Length: 355
Image (spheres, rainbow, N blue to C red):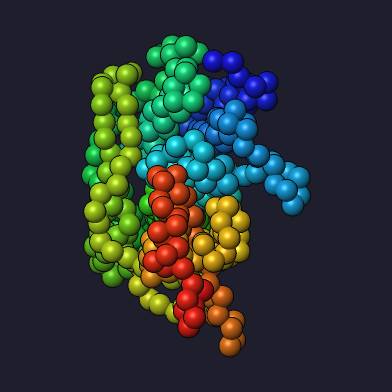
């Protein structure tokens, strides 16, 4: 495959960073090891995604400030233009969330959880290489440099349960290990990025989880989102492949920072970050007029689902905004050939209907 020059250079940077991540993981020096692994791993994906986007002639510079887009935007564009599944996007988001907290504060990620994420990252990197560049990791480095562990990857739910038990023990009165416990709590909170977009770990989240654990809360109640996470493992030894998947779990809802709740299962999120599309921006991005965009939203039930829209209230005014999930649902409908003339006939604006 003939690559555009910038795409080839970005791909090489991605491969170099992945190699550094593998070297750091397999290294003998434990001091700063997790930081090095996650930093290089996150950078490798940002470079590879940008390489794929450039190859597809997708703009990777922000029109407002002229700077290259960040990781979160790369993942969103990857879902749109590179065919990344939600599970694949979740793997990339989780690596970014773990890296972010490791870089800016104190995070303790157990060896089992670190290994399964690194292995899943290597699998995903190889999948993306093959899918978009007709290339494989084995063409660039031998199996012996892949992340290696003395233990085979274990079920993610077992690893999460073990980590939760360890946190509970660290919080036992008299242990004097509270900072260690909170560092581990942050890792589990970061892993919720597998399921949700825009995960940011706040002190309030950590405080709420800590209180719930001290009160004897069950893991499935304190971290209900993580109950939806599964893993698919294939192969063995150095050829093992790990992919994260989603399963059914307990339903949860998101809360804004201004809501006063005392339940560890309710996670604070920046709702303005999650629901960032206005009606006009959504229509323009989809290439529709605003009235036809309204009709498509009605056809798909976008405005009736909290996953897709949120109403922000400012004094007496209400502003409805939409999430990337809404855009993806509408984009998929258009790509699948939805008959917009029929949609317009059935759901087009009528007198008395709200837009």
